Length: 395
Image (cartoon, rainbow, N blue to C red):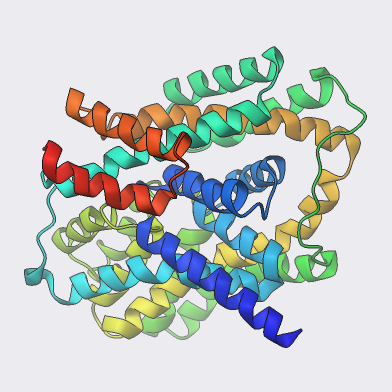
């Protein structure tokens, strides 16, 4: 039994480590990579169970794609699986960003490099496949297709970090009252975490959020200030990595911890490396002043910004699992899942398509990547390598 658990632990860690090395394209693309790996390839989750996790993480503050990864780890191996999934998915980009921060003169990152642009292009293919696959399963009738299209239009035209949450709430209400009931609404049990444990983690989340500013005032040590600033940034932001930018900037630039030039240089690279954008916090911790900085500052900042998500995912999942079993809630989830498809559809256009497809060559490369993913069933990490290789010929 122990050897089996060790094997599962190693397997989970290595899978997420590979995803952390190859998942380019931002949070929406990450959801596509996760779906390909855990739904299509490994069958660890059904399409509906995966969409349920995505729906939950859209409601929680923090980086949605990282939270989905944590939730998959939790459903596989409990709290230990959550930690392994986070470590594997986060460490690769965090190390790159810290090394970059400690040796700025050795790196040149520019948006004009063809290989970097190819990574943005392949994200179009990954997201397009995710939208198509989820759309087929989660929007099988005209009512849910309509929900998805309306959700997509609203998200595209209303520029607000909270609009996605509002869209999902409205879609859920519509689903509960207007979608046709079936005798066997889809439900696949996830990890059966105890609600008592969930309540403890949610209490910890709130307690740390409120106590850190007090502790910072009583003991004005730089390590506590650093931890408090990044914990609040991870706990209070809705809408993913890009939305956290102004919140973190307000914490580290006006205080003099990081210069604006260093901040923007790191943010540029953070958008070029694979994995979650929140690993930008490790870079900021490394280049901040006064001490602790370098690797210790990076570790403090990285743990602090992701800790709220860790506590919220473990805290919310047991209650979410219970809610998912109620007939009216399950009907509501049908509408919410259709709304998720609409949000992904909107993201396929902006920012994924608008930041990558500028010419016929770009479109051809994206089409080639989609062909490999959807019809030849090539793994997404291999498509990334093939597409980058093809870019040397095309561009």
